[in-house]
Image (cartoon, rainbow, N blue to C red):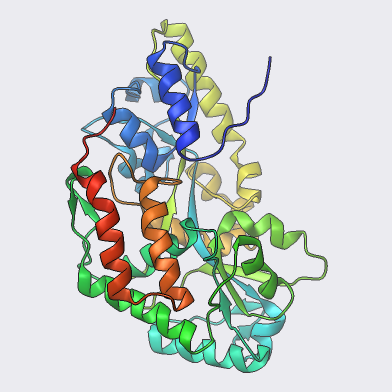
Length: 368
């Protein structure tokens, strides 16, 4: 057996698609939920039936209902979620304590833009500089995740894309409100102007910032920093409702001829992975397998359990053949929104530039 490592995003999904079309697919594959839907629409995946689930002692009721409902495509179930991985907020306990925002080792509840900005101001006094960091240099996914999190908190804000990526349906007023808020934080010095992925972690790890925004998978990085006392929470509700940009890793069955025994064997492998998902949860992801997520064992896992509620308010990327985790859409839109944070573009300019660059994709049919 020879192991092959593929870059995440388009290279991996292209390889999976070509392998399936070439009749050499894996028995089971992993796909982000946002990318699995495209594979299903292209006829690359087998449907997963209730009988399939029952054959290994599973039912849809055993799985996180938000991600389970989101995977359903054209009236068919096409993926079994392993997790939800949301955009969250890390905090440095020592800095937050000095800012008067810590209570029994936990971050005090912050609700609403006014309270959050007041907290940023207090943290900035402690650090003498930035209060919160988020990557935006040579990094396009994070600016998109930050935008999508806050944009999805605004009631009535329509998906950025509609009609499976054939139309641009972003709510311009809501988008400008979010980007204007990010620009304000940056201009006041509360939010960094320019930091790459690794550089955005360092201030929180070293006590030079109080907050850090990123996917929860960076928990293991934080845990590796000697002496760092930190916590994690869902991104606070700053607008009308709680929401966090997220995706889910899922198991899918690439289309191939399978005997009933082979099909049950594939399902048995998936079930075995769900049974072991506590290990995955230790690495940060919120488990989709409810017997684990609802267990006392998981509830005692800190700080993982402290942000698990973010999965209930997951805001998945808009549906399109060029959208989803690691996609062309994230690259185009995220690169423009990064410029707003850097002070190099206005909200109006970023939205227009993103729109202009998306036009080709809006008009191009799915290649699948």
